[in-house]
Amino acid sequence: MKIFCSGIGGIGLSAYAALQKANGHDVSGSDRAGGGIVDDLHAMGIRVTDDQSGNAIPPDTELFVYSEAIPDNAPERKRASNLHIPQKSYPEALSALMQGKRVIAVCGTHGKSSTTAMAARLLMESGLDPTVVVGTRMKELQGRNWRKGEGEWFVVEACEYRRSFLHYAPRIILLTNCDGDHFDYYASVGEYRKAFAEFIGSLSEDGTVIAHANDEDSWKLVKDSGKRSIDADAFPSVRLHTPGEHQRSNARLVLALATILEVPQADAKKSLSGYAGSWRRMDILGTTEFGVTIINDYAHHPVEIRATIAAVREAYPQRRLVCVFQPHTHDRTIKLYKDFISSFRGTDVVIIPDIYEARNDRESGRVDIQAFVADIEKGSDVETYDGSSLEGTEALLRTTILKNGDVLLVMGAGSVTNLATAMAVESSGGSIAGGGSSSLA
Image (cartoon, rainbow, N blue to C red; front, side):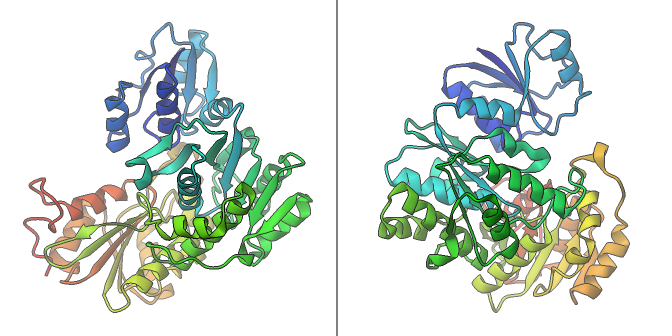
């Protein structure tokens, strides 16, 4: 089949495209973003263009798959419609790939990627040869976000945005938490949780949901569903190579999963103890020549920010912590404003470069960054700066903020990851060294 993927560089759709290429299909696509994921697709022989006018779609395309970020009126979707090409959203298309497999779906507001990665590691090391689709790049997959397996299990990170996960038919659900998010789509936390209730309710009679009984909101969803359930909090804490109680909490979900898969607990603990994190999840990029340790993390929700800061403090209790945080969408920032401004306690300096406008066509308001900075300073009792832009933030870090021996924590789901990379690599393009011309003093 000839498949064209619009938004192919996305963390989800790129995995689908790679799997379909590995299945022998002719895959091409478009994306304006470059980076390592697109480079990997090119290396597989998948043609990727930055032309999203619609002209790049081959007329003989048999299936057009689009990212959830691609709106209905996008030129490529109009072009596919004019060519009478069948269209599927990414979750619809991914669901078709799951046919004939037993699906393990990891869902929740936070921790999905890490928990999916841990679960995938467990199945791989137990010889179960799973197919995997995960929203991060795993060390165990040589930096990829997918794996084609020949076994019966399909491990998937199941995103709740726009109720995407309702397309899947899981046999097992791992629920990390259910705090509320994506308020550009969900009108309230109540509506958000209804989507999770529907997802859990879709389990077959012999299905199982694993969750934390200590999390009252999540456990209520589970018990109200009437589905067979396992309390992950009945399992012990496992020491991981990556710090943070939130990660140990995720690991308990996977220990519970091991009982369903009939993997001995000793083997499961051994597998989990070797877990050392993944891309943009407490991702230590290195230490500069001035002793500044640079950490890149995907945290973009107040609960995630607090958990990540606590994990960094656990790992580096005596060091000065400088945090760069890029809020992800105006809507999320406005909806969770009070929680955001008190989330940075425990840091020494915070810099806000800008707001990442991932869904500009659906934003309902605008954040006043100057007021946001002032409110963080007051609410978290921390010195806070407006970095004005990623470039301005980098200059501020290099010339004014960073001191020898600092920990630089870069957080956010958007383009701020490029700042973390820039800070960790010499301007000459060499290996980690601290920015070449920077004094970092």
